[in-house]
Length: 415
Image (cartoon, rainbow, N blue to C red):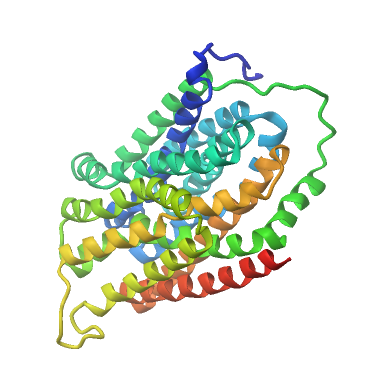
């Protein structure tokens, strides 16, 4: 059945703003879903018959299929429009959430994570593409920060509120809630997001050529630096907030589930508010490259501080960090890593409007390919070397990707 292309008529002042906010709620849902395991890893793993380390590997399926969906999502956004693609994705997300609620073993849980990854793959691309096609570059930079801030509020929901829900009603209730949210936000999209205005007949779809164009954008010199930093940036943030932060507070610091959710709140607030602050600093200073590099290096250093302050850590009898100390170090980490929206602004500024979907997809592809790769790697590291080794791993990865970012952005500026 074709999706109706009509939406309600909005006042001129809301014709762009309201659709962007509603679409950003999809990114909120995406963040809620991907960060759920941080406060439910122990009960999820026990219920489906696996270990917490292997569950980290299984949740990597979300990021893997999310990454694989970036190219087709970008192509379809340019060809079919934001409204049609968004409604399709909400349907798949609702189906994946129901599958997660009903999962009984590792195979069914993996399948649910795969469906959720496909459904959520365009939740950020949809508002970004609408903004890129309707707003001037200066306003796009502002809205990209706002969209990410709205989306990162999903991490607030998956902290203490979701810890309470899981504690009182079980982890499956969180997936039923996610399914209901997918249906509700999808209904709002159908009401307020306009359909694509076709001014000419689109050329026939050539998948190989279209996909190849996205991949070429990923490897082009102007995009190479941002892509390499994106490969680790989001992975580090989601690893800390989405998977390993909760186990760190519960297993290493001895907190209860709800206490761990509370301890993750400062980090979550930083990730929600940080993109807006980063956008403001970028506009005031005009030093986007230096801001991205320095903030990511500092984020890696902060992870090493947490590892150094554990009992028996590198300080060897010196200062031992409390759970509160770690929570505020994580907050500082979140403030630093929240410069990520500036990578999207870098990519958008170098691309024509009619290619916005593909350009943003190429960058988002690397965000989530990196997340999938690092999630699988960190799952193995946690199982074999412990949680402290995971933090050291991400600190080294952030340093390496930042140095590559500096190298290739310097080359792009000289060309």
